[in-house]
Image (cartoon, rainbow, N blue to C red; front, side, top):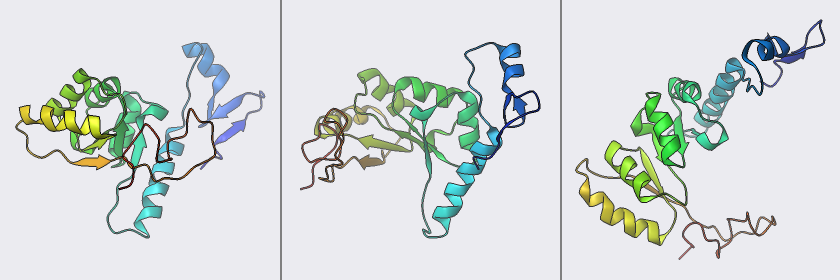
Amino acid sequence: MLGRKSVNALNHLEIGQCDVVDLAEQFGTPLYVFDEEEIVGAMREYREAFAQHYPSFHVAYAGKAFLCGAMCRLVAQEGLWLDVVSGGEYFVARGSGFPWNRLIFHGNNKTDEERALALREGVGRWVVDGFEELECLLEESKQYAHGRLPVLLRVTPGVDPHTHAYITTGRVESKFGFPPC
């Protein structure tokens, strides 16, 4: 799917058959340019690859990679779930019409206001990052009458990925997630 970038006769880069120099002149810079066909194609490739091996699965797009209303609509159109990590991302997703029941509310630093927003408006899955968050969530969720709150637990598997200490998250002593029993 990564073959839709080319250089045209004017020696200008083209993305999705659009001359980026023309786009910059029309819209100004800086400018983000995405090829919708390439993005949708990648989403479909992921779904098809999983479907060959797993009878029940969900593919989720991580909003922190890039999120705007148009991206939310593409993700929704292709039937993917959307992983959001803040109230701002949640707001963008819901404002675009993204279905609440396919939202995954993730993130290790959710504020009281963000938790209240997601509890009030709804999420498809809530990723619990540790015991402190679980305790808050158990108490706060009692205020909302929409029923069960499906949760996923972030688990530290106890592996050392040999990366910089500030970004390592897989070790048992990681500040993110639940350690194995």
